[in-house]
Image 1 (cartoon, rainbow, N blue to C red):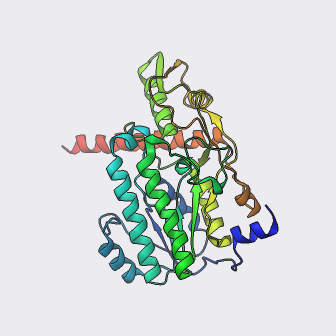
Image 2: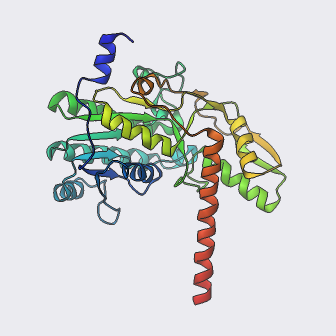
Length: 337
């Protein structure tokens, strides 16, 4: 990329300091939001939060009233309705309505109330199904979307476009990021809604516990995916928030991908499962490959620190700890009944 291209992408604004600012992480209880909250604890800022019982982010009046009362100076929009292939296929109306509403309501209120800076999170799954690899940011909307997550992708694309439009028309310092597939503590391990890593870890764990000789995995195992630990993602987002001001979305990833079959074998090793992995080619694979070009983040001085094997061990340890906690809660309930 030439000097003019870099200037257009990265902008010319001064670095944005979070120190002393009132910062709202929308979706602070989710996997990404929780990681952002942990990471922002090192920035000497004041974190403010709105729980679901306090504000329904799908209702514009509620969002505007809460933001007017709370007056955040910086906003990171990590709130979203997300899920794997099964969830996207079975709940398309929820995925498009919820995610459109969240983007519209938060961004418009942020503009109206003079929020200094806003970061909106998209996703790598909004790139076209068949796309040049690795995927550069200018390939968005260059081809048909993956049908199994079209409604989610359309909503997220609208959010990215809205952030850019508010920057163009009203000079709002709204930026957006496209994280790759994320995993780690706080992930959703519900098999009806989970992504590939938590689904694999849970299936393998349950198969090991029950002595099953084989685990069935959807698809052929051939698609290749890129994965980033959520704590790395949070660090990248804070880095972007403080160092980037431009109209184009920025990819966030590790720049390396892995075949699903190889991922499953690695996850089995982490769990300690020694049975067979059986693939069901009758189930959808999704896009054949998804790998992000992370040149922009590298040029901004950021690189991931957590290797995939280490990250899988961390995610599995969190899952085991959560299950142990639930067992203790159940025991206390039974003893007091």
